[in-house]
Length: 347
Image (cartoon, rainbow, N blue to C red; front, side):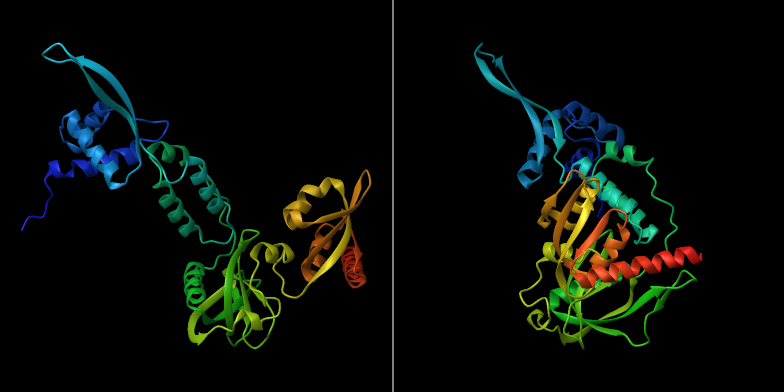
């Protein structure tokens, strides 16, 4: 039996393909131009009214096709003017603008943790969401050198975690750290048993917000360092039994308080900063930061933040900030700075 579809019955599919490949708001086609492409690329000759009818059918079917309608009056055989309309400038509206697609592609190009091959495959798929004009503009784009160690299991890990979170199931996995051989090595021999609650992207990395089953506090794991993940049959521990998640996860607040995704409690911290780094302070702490005192060059800031995260941040910006309280954090940062200076002098 021959299942080949006659060319005439494929016209509506051919027209849709033409609109997808060759049109957008800045590139529109007339009925004649569509007819010319049908003849040249599909070896199908059709009349303009056939093109119009098929486009109207596509619109009725739900495709967002825009066009320009020109109304004119033509005399009939009796000499009476009758209204007639001509349709032209057809284009298919896109789910994503070119700028939005470019942002998606850029996020992949500069991602340092996803496998390069899979990034390239996804970029090709994203390009397919637009037309030939967009594709021609991204041919020259190249991503950064592929010099980062990669975990090829990351997409499988994301799939399993997504399913486990949806089904309220525990997971087990191996958690790894990189060694001097540039390969992942298990942090410990036995797998972690985890109650997964949420995944979040922070600082270009995926983190899992969860609870290690034998403890009662919140934990964070880098998804790109997880291997050998399995979804278990057991139900997750309710969040209300996890310290810090009794009222659920307020994601924006959680991410702001855990700027490096360290576990542990959040505290109120005051620090003095140079005004020239205010933009970076907003990048890290968001709009919830409070400004208590101001001078011409400096400002005293108050934030509610994870203590270990703040300790690392204060070291990173040591030339520009000074922690004022609590005293335990002041001493920790002071000791860290002393140790860093001693190591520098010894080297």
